[in-house]
Length: 448
Ligand SMILES: Cc1ncc(COP(=O)(O)O)c(C=O)c1O
View 1 (cartoon, rainbow, N blue to C red):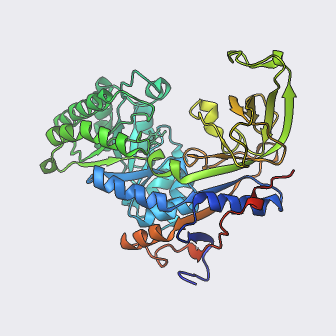
View 2 (cartoon, protein in one colour):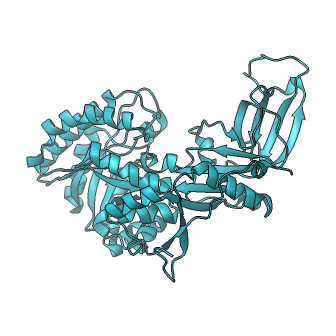
């Protein structure tokens, strides 16, 4: 068997020519239909390799530092680590995870804006020196716990269109940067660069222009204080679309060339999270309960576009906001599932809502969508579920984490080997030719 390692922990199914993600999902559903119908993810790791190639083509030499909090599953971390990407960690456990993969401290930055002193000490011990900071209390805490720390001053961005919460909460003003430099001088702490973050919901690319200009001002200010700064971190916010990546590049490249030319010795880095992982993971969930509501219970704000006697369905699925849909709590998720079972094109569609299994009033996943009538035991498929859903999760109400099946096409596997990743470099994985039976009609039977 190609790439088999005796002590590897995880397997990646290599897909034969012609087999698709849909075939993998069909197979898993077929298996699960007989073994408890647990929710599961299929992670196409080949997509990460492709995303990295795209990043190198469009964004090089900007070095990516992947934010571990976006998706810390072993397949993702190991692939990205072997591709030579750095990591942005927000906690001790994330730092430990990437250290276990053998990532060197220079390739790790500690980016939590509110760090626990004990975790700063952990970073100090591990030789992880680069960390972000946006206020003087944090700076003093860092000075006490990690005298060799190298700070990136996190400046606020001015996204007027979206994610105001993020802007308001984190990042400092130019004026305060001067104060922070005075504090850093007083406490003997090095400042080595600037970081900003533009949310991926930001439609206004001007935000980058302001942020890079502001960063230049901070670099100039630092010279007055005698700090030698050589890192500019432009954060995350790349959706995964090649077009958006090119648009951002088109806006930032000329500015970077003017303000931070190669000769300046400034290394520009970024923290693309969603970009790498979002589209790589698909979640399959099972309907565990169903209710038919009468008309008056139609959710507020839902347009009355149907006959009074049409039913409204409420479906409960075996994953929710206390699991894979956690980002729904911050309103980031706006996703409508596909129905797995085949249904006729002219089948009537009904107003439906989807809820998680907790019976908690916050556990609503989709408030209102049109679906054919479904039964308990049917499966729903959510795509683009790779970001923000696969980190640390609670175990509310016996929540059972979905299983993860990793896959990759043989052609992506070849590409990966061209990129220098072999079964020897992926220490925790073994590659197995997957035994996908291409879909047959009887696989779509979804009896409860
Ligand atoms: C400070 C910071 N940097 C980077 C990221 C990654 O962002 P994205 O997944 O949009 O690339 C986030 C995500 O919330 C963030 O808060």
